[in-house]
Length: 297
Image (cartoon, rainbow, N blue to C red; front, side, top):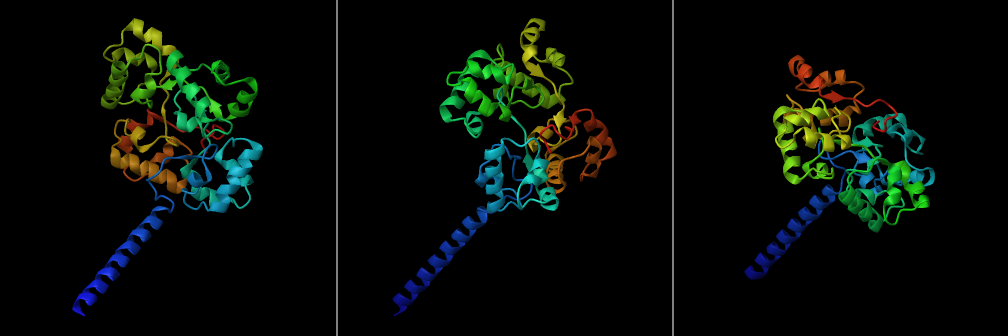
């Protein structure tokens, strides 16, 4: 009888342990907590991705996708008020997690391009291959040079896309290598210089980077920009490029944005925990806030 008793205890213990695993897995399916997610693009996100946003239930996520399929991409996050079930109060709680940015065909990965309605895997891959062979696109219309893209196809996808220059203040070494004449070593030098000295004030400052002389700068500068870092779209990692912003402060900025919605101005940074008058003066020169209508709110 003792043997059967111990066997029963073992079975019960095993069942309790499995119950804990199931419970943990079910918790993992819940929306991510603040500070744990990138911005969700309402123009390309699936229903499952939208449901990761706090306060976004399956019905509302489905309505967003259906509206987008019928009416095309959203111009701004504020356009979500046209969705049945979305009111101002509900949207206010979600704004810090959302963006309506167009995809930059000069930096987007194939898996991101495939999220655009009408863009399948072969076409997305063709865009990547063309870009790797010929350098950045000057405009979205240049996609007609890509195998598999015709005028009709371009018309269906172009409203979701943009062709911006490579931002040397936020681009990864991999993204910078898209530029003709930019090899892995040079791209890495740019990233390391940026990490040591903060964001570039202009593309001309690349002349201070090892391996870039006047001739090299002249050959690559037309594909580059040194835009300031946008407080409303930058990741915590990108924010740490700014002098005076460490990992903790970068996370505070992201969490404030998620809790309160997009920053209305750079001055709003003063409300973030850890921002002092001293580091505010340092940070101010390197950041910006895109205005309403720019697809960020």
